Length: 171
Image 1: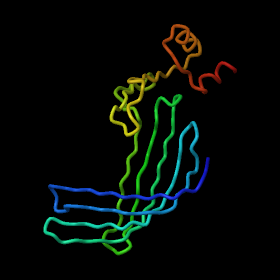
Image 2 (image 1 turned 30 degrees about the vertical axis):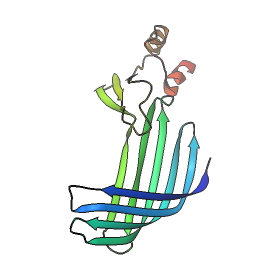
Image 3 (image 1 turned 45 degrees about the horizontal axis):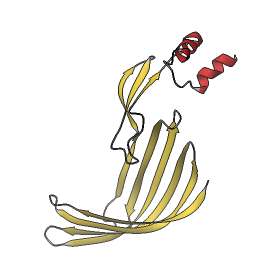
Image 4 (image 1 turned 180 degrees about the vertical axis):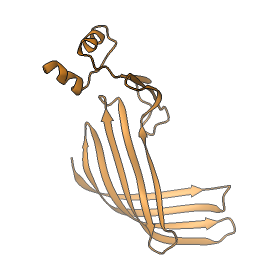
């Protein structure tokens, strides 16, 4: 269901190698959930942030920034594969930096083998932030012959058939 929400953030990072020793970010702002249903979810949010930097030499910087966040998730193949992208695009209000972009995009499964027009082999990503998928490996077969689909369903070589393939049966 679509709805407005309010979000807050508090990030603290410490670095023992780079010149930047500590980074703190505190922010808050509104967001909107466009949908969140059995097929996926999409939301956008905005934040007003205060960022504090502390450097190794003891000097400090701080500035305010605005940011736009997004979070998109789409389930495919009966929630077995999940396509996702999330991230944040930020802009300093005080000219400290031009823009910042932190984002990721991917599948909950990674492609391990691919034969064009034949199949795609996928393996679960165990370190995925929502946890490892229950099915460790998937093979997506591309079968265009109706008789071959029926034969493979009968012998359990196929577990799932797409809507496009099913439309061939009704024709």
